[in-house]
Image (cartoon, rainbow, N blue to C red):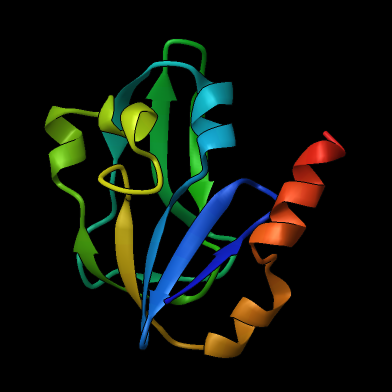
Length: 123
């Protein structure tokens, strides 16, 4: 399994041709308590850098951008009932959507864990 990160603090965890997208611990911490999550419908085509979901916290509403292009094959509907899961386990149970990758080479433009940790030190 490969995990890559965007400069917008989204992650994509890739297994075969399916990528699981969520926000990083840094992002959930910056947002504060998540109170609402809006997810796309299964079958929706999403482009790299396009809106993948919307999160609302006590501080602000924010778009979640897709780190890669693909078609939504699954959404984490548990987040609608318990959006706080994003805060509690962002890289685990707090994932947003799964997409079937349409252009896996886009992953090469993202950061690996070491590069993302270095990026965080510059913020």
